[in-house]
Amino acid sequence: MFTFTPQAAQKLNAIMQERGGHLAVKIEIDSSGSGEVWRMTLVRRSAATAVVSGVPVQVDAGTAQLLDGLIIDWVMTPDGPGLGVYDQNLLDEVKPRRRS
Image (cartoon, rainbow, N blue to C red):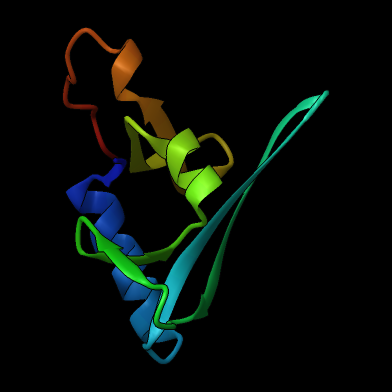
């Protein structure tokens, strides 16, 4: 199972409310010979919508396996705010990150 940090969950839910509500984050990961391509888009909620850390999400079974152990966080980068993905399986311990 993957999780969202409280900051990511709050921001994503606020974005979905600003856009009219009844939305979900659809996560797709395409694996190819040149690596993985990630897509996170907003879609209308459906019967296939699950709730992860308070965020409505839609993922297929293959993508759910690839997401196992990941933490999705809201981070500040040189290009601006966005989502960061961390692998809990590779971290010895989760340390709080300084937020701007």
